[in-house]
Amino acid sequence: MLLVLIRGAGDVGSAVAHALHESGFAVLLHDDPRPSHARRGMSFTDAFYDGVATLAGVVGKRARDASDLPPMMQCRRAVALTDLLISDVVGLLSPDVLVDARMRKRIRPESQRGLAPLVVGLGPNYEAGANADVVVETAWGNDLGTVIRSGRCRDFEGEPQLIAGHARDRYVYSTCEGELTTTLRIGDVVSAGQEVARIGTEILRAPLSGRLRGLTHAGAFITLGAKVVEVDPRGPTAQVHGLGDRPRRIAYGVREAIGNLAR
Image (cartoon, rainbow, N blue to C red):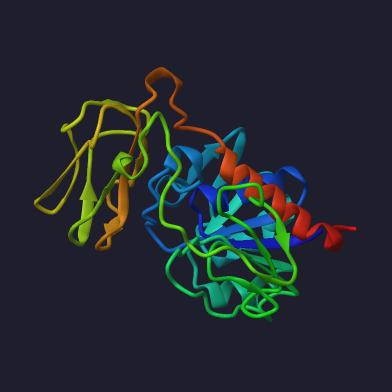
């Protein structure tokens, strides 16, 4: 039984966890306490707040403490989640694979080689053989999900995909730091200009009309410039829950990258 430790419980890390769990791996998803990922309907993020979350038929459960982790890895009935220090998790479980799915677009990740026999890096600024053993391409295009065993993935290009003619204008970014408050939920219908959330006295308003695809959980601490709201303008056909196409293709790439270890 291979044990895979995934860093980052956003939509990409959660899709990786989902795919590997369905393929029979023991999966542990790690993040900071009260993570601020906005696409909560497409991830296991809410389990860090509520103890449990379901993504596309797979249950994720937060471990209460370190003693829960070994039996959860043996049981494998759910994806396990933890916010313990990453060094403590590695020391306790000695994972076979570490996947960095934190998707830190403008930060060159520290080298994590040696934390597990195989380290897989996702996102910009990863280079196979340097700060990871292998890399999976995460940028949109024909190479999305490709396993890179020599060289680096594409640099961060900055612009999101168009949805119904809208790209960056679908999002709201914080202009201050603080705890987020909101009474709305993922999937709620909003109108352009409607108040969606607050960070202290800062009011965050819907940038356009549609359904909430992204909304950071109430109680999360928000940093300056963080993406906290996303509106899908497609109305009834908006995808706000489940596995997105890009995260799914990245997850398949990760599964391919670690496939040799499973044989």
